[in-house]
Length: 270
Ligand SMILES: [Zn+2]
Image 1 (spheres, rainbow, N blue to C red):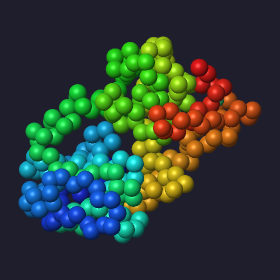
Image 2 (cartoon, rainbow, N blue to C red):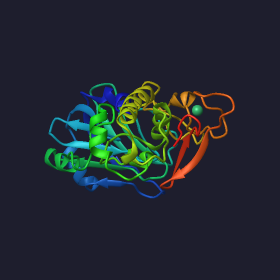
Image 3 (cartoon, rainbow, N blue to C red):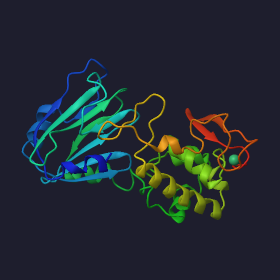
Image 4 (cartoon, rainbow, N blue to C red):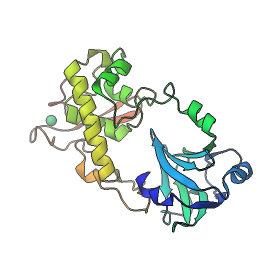
């Protein structure tokens, strides 16, 4: 998402608008008229990311934080439907005419932060180190004492930021670690494999621009499908054979903390 909208850097904000929508309203803060007063005529100086949020930085020091949660999209092209369009930011000066926020379930948010508010909202205490760079030692420091199942703990954004549900299953399969294994029972070599697999899986997912599943929700910034779904090892592949141990094995689906987990019982033994 971040890379998809990077072209807005250098643009100036002309207007922001809460798009009229019959669906459950998303959280926009502050109120749109206050929001507008603070951002109009400001220049976008960078597009950043903090965990699973996109951060549009303005030269004023303010930051617009778009948090897509389950079904939100950040777009610089026509949205998949008008019906779920939630927020529009009109731009001028650098070729991109608008930045849109679309959200089918409406669980996401668009919030404006001052520099000081941003620092306190996204401090180390609230958002863990980023998954793309976290080392095995830091994984162990932050989760090594936890009695939670590794798959559940990986989704805790305060421990490590940026791992989504789908990618947690994927990386545990690559690391050959059982998703129900308790964190405090993982060995040093297993933490190393988890850290390595986190980087490998997330880097591949970024390269393929995410996974567009059967429901078609996820789209890139140009409203095109992602490509990572064609490379899934286990996610959404229940009953199919394991890409590592092959014929005779079957990927299994279980539920942990209300979220689906997929794994291979043969090469991810408990
Ligand atoms: Zn297997």
